[in-house]
Length: 234
Ligand code: TMP
Image (cartoon, rainbow, N blue to C red; front, side, top):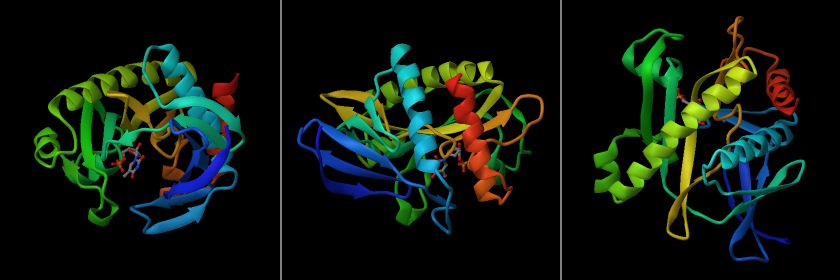
C-alpha cells in the first residue's frame, strides 16, 4: 500500500490516502492537547505508544466480533485503516465518575457508577464538542435511529470487553471515547483507542495511567503510556 496525499490533520493524528480507494494510512503524532486545545504540548514517543496500544485494542475487539476500521500496523507510527465516513458524534462510556461528568453533575471523582453511562457529544471543535442526545443526533441528521441503535449496542459491548481486558492487566477502565464510521453501509469502530481517549487507573493504587497526567500536570506522562503498552504486550 502506497502513501499518497495528506487528507486531514487532527490534533493527534494525520490521515493520508493511498493508492487504494478503500484504505487510508493513520499516522500517530506526539502532539497532545487538552480542554479543546487550550492546553498544548508534546508527549515524547506518544505516537509510537498509541499506535501500538490502538493496534492491540483493535485486534482484541475484532477477535471478539466488533467490526473496526483497523487493517494492519504498518510501522512504528502508522496503521492501515479502512476508509470510512465518520459519524460526527463522540461516544463516551463511563464506569467511574471523572472529568466532565464530575464538573457538570457535581459528583465526586472516583464514584463507581451503578450502571455504565453513555454520552454523545457533537464533534464540533468550534462549539467545544457539546453534549447532545439521540433526538439532537436525528434532528441534525448526524445519524439515523438505526445507526444510533447500532452505535449504542457496540459501545455497550465494547465497554464490557474492554473493562475485562484492562482488569486482567490490573487497570480499571474509568471511561473512554469512541468514534464510529460508515463503511459499505455498515457502522464500524474507527479512530483510536489509547490513553489519550481512555482513563485508566491502576487497581490498588489508583495511579492514573492516561492523558489526565498531561491535562493536570501530574508528571511521568511518557512512563504512564509506556506502562499501559508494557502490560498489554506481555
Ligand atoms: P471527559 O470527562 O473530559 O468528558 O472525557 C471522557 C473520556 O473521553 C475520557 O476518557 C477522555 C476522552 N476524551 C477524548 O478522547 N477526547 C475528547 O476530546 C474529550 C473531551 C474526552
